[in-house]
Length: 433
Image (tube, rainbow, N blue to C red; front, side, top):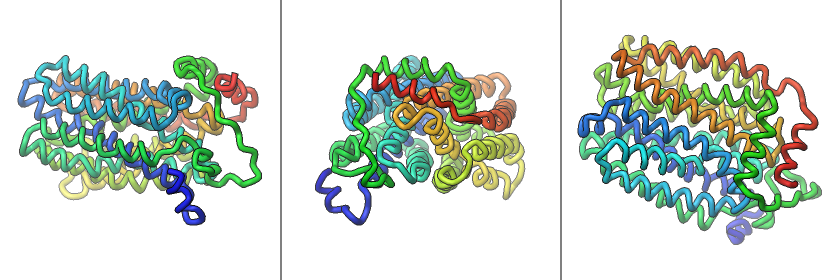
């Protein structure tokens, strides 16, 4: 890593190489997280499992993906970013490959729900927040936008390809492809992901040479740090506003649209590949939308950005049931409109968490906020499947999701209305004390 940094001296800061490595890690994880939506119909056809049963495993996966976040962020402080991510990727590859042998619903719950869900939670948004806060003083929003967009790119790269494999060869070859993707990024992490800028003799991007270099936090028990940060943050209103808004974000994206859109399209006579292509098209637009959101977060009030993001997302979801009845412009219009907004909420949310809680505490606080995101996703994944099984359509679930977004649009305007002086010091004291 040092020789790479020396070769780049004067041409590019190594922080951008770090962003590139983490981008590929998150891309592989995004492909893994998107896989159950491709497997839903084949598993239903082969084993006779209901969508509610399959959705249970997916909801556990989504919940653990979020709940693992704060502990992963604390583990990165204690054991280092690289060892933590390497263990997560190895566990992820093993779990996905092991799922090729499942024949019972409990096995899917155990492997895809518990094992894969926990592993993906380590290499997730908390990894992005940790890397960005360590490597960037300026351009944080842009860097976070690029990393967040990797989820969209993961859908773009994997979904149509995986859906085609599933349609022609069954679901088992799909899991081997996804496991191989996790294995491929292991060497990149091992060789090219340093712990901090100081590891390669650099300062964070945008930090002046005369700025005092803060010492790395002393190693602490990651469980104590994670729960200690939660105890402090949970006493503040801003934490619960962030938590609720991200709960709605997860419910309206990964949980509902990400899990059920392909199956929803099949209800209207579309093939699995067509549904996956629609989802991947949304990923293309989100790649641009989320990156642009990061750029905007460096320049504009994050609260107002979130207001528009949640409001427009809610309107697009309310429009979705009607889009299937419009011959030419219906679904393409939804794909563009919703795709630009898919996870554009992440950079402003990270910005608010950092502004309120400080650079060192923010990744762990954001980890707990991401837990809210994934609890919302689990709620929507399970609830959407149960409503579809009982009502025979997704219309009611879609309207509920859109309505929650409109509520969140109003709620976010209350976040960080005033600077709170003592709060940041109290939270940082968890790591330094």
